[in-house]
Length: 130
Image 1 (cartoon, rainbow, N blue to C red):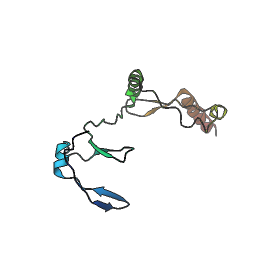
Image 2: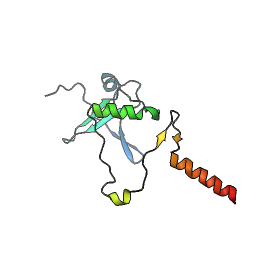
Image 3: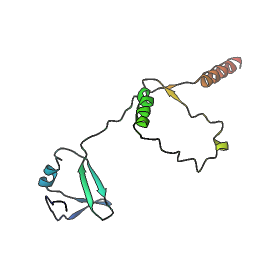
Image 4: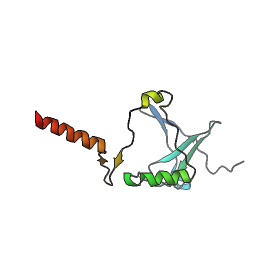
């Protein structure tokens, strides 16, 4: 059996539609949660609530030009992409004709495809004739 380090009976505090629990400084200090604003909370099947320090925050990668390499690294590390959540709702026949590939430059701006550029030119020529 695991050693209990600190036991506390806590009163639930109503906060809007939710409830909060105030933890003692001793507990937070033991968990090395001093200035963090976030913790990880897990509810186990045996109704045990586990609170963990979220030590490592992974920053959001906004550099779209690196996403392909990052996805390749994740797949090589065994993280496979999730199956398409729409496959049960959209048939292959209904999916035909749609273009899903979009390219972006390093600044995150969409790079127009050749199709779009040609359509713009055609529309411009058509407007010039009118």
